Image 1: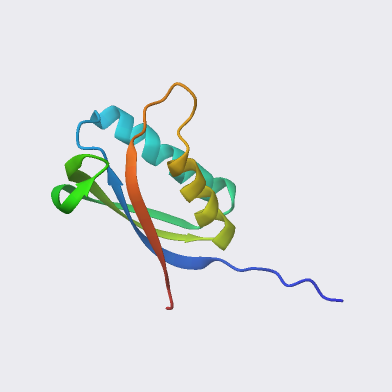
Image 2: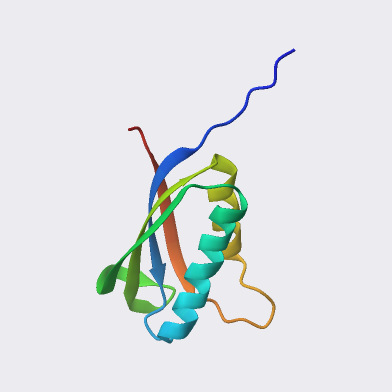
Length: 107
């Protein structure tokens, strides 16, 4: 019986952060995600900050969100772990992420 080895996949994601969070906290949270990708042998983690944007509707009571686009090359399980980390802030930390979505790119 052969074991199927999963290879790295390319993903594009959009992450919405609370607009009232300090830049230093945003950076710490992005570094956590970058560390997850590196730990799981991901080969790429590119961040494009889109800045403060109006939402089409309130998300968790916020009419605006700080948008960050992520271009990542990693294992599929890493994306699931990132989503789990963003949904469950560490004990004692305030919720920073409002919403996120990731799409697999077929390049």
